[in-house]
Amino acid sequence: MWAIILHGGAKEIEPDEADANRSGCLRALSAGRAVLEGGGSALDAVEAAIRVLEDDPAFNCGYGSVLNAAGEVEMCAAIMEGRTFNVGGVSIVQGVRHPVSVARAMLEEETTLIAGPGARAFAAEKGLELCDPAALRASKDEKKRGRTGTHDTVGCVALDRHGLLVAGTSTGGLDDTPVGRVGDSALPGCGFYADNDLGAVAFSGDGERIARKILAARVMHALGPQGPDEALGLAIRHVAQIGGEAGGIALTPDGRFGWMHNSREFAVAYASSDQPEPRVYLRKAEERE
Ligand code: ASP
Image (cartoon, rainbow, N blue to C red; front, side, top):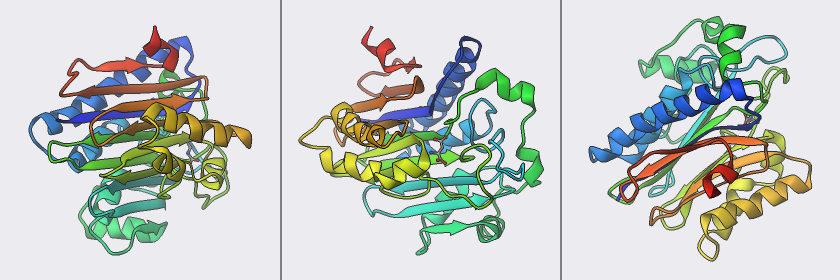
């Protein structure tokens, strides 16, 4: 079987932003599922889905990322696969069109996380697309169409026909944070994790609080005895205890989806070989209706 779930951030989505969030998630889902349906790997599926979100200014990643205190775009992204436990991550990278593809290239390296100018130099060495760092700033109008909330980090988790589980994240971080600030999105065990025997998970939300409560690690510990929704719910209660807001998605090795959030909205889309009709929701309550 195959399965894929992705999110567009734990945030507030105003009524005039709903369409951009739903359609952006569905476009990304369709890119990822095309890979899985064709027998491709979960790594390719997660990368393909996140690249679509990185091109979409409705989301805080790639083009349309938020700006740091110096008015610049600095991005983090990561990808992890649950068979070898390989992790590839980039942090505070500037001037690359698709941070998730740089993270994917890092997955082949012994080093797991590369930051700043070193990350851009690595992307150049691998022949990945570079751009003027300022070219990633979207106009106010473009951004307005999709988001006003603070946590628009994206994430995707996929399971392929070979049983490989992969988790990926991509973000512009949080608005107006100090130059060089790193959140949870490129830290394994915090913003994401994948283990073929247990499941895979990706978060959005208050990065510092997600890191302090090692949210992804908590989900991994809970999975098995707990279902994916319950495991995510437990983790989110932990972050809420220290005043944090988060939303997370998860997949189990047998293709069960989970998603939970304590943010007002959390745009999520998913599909699987068992349930090929794509679903997209802006709130968990919509799924229950
Ligand atoms: N978790 C991200 C960070 O702290 C922010 C987000 O979810 O939008 O960098």
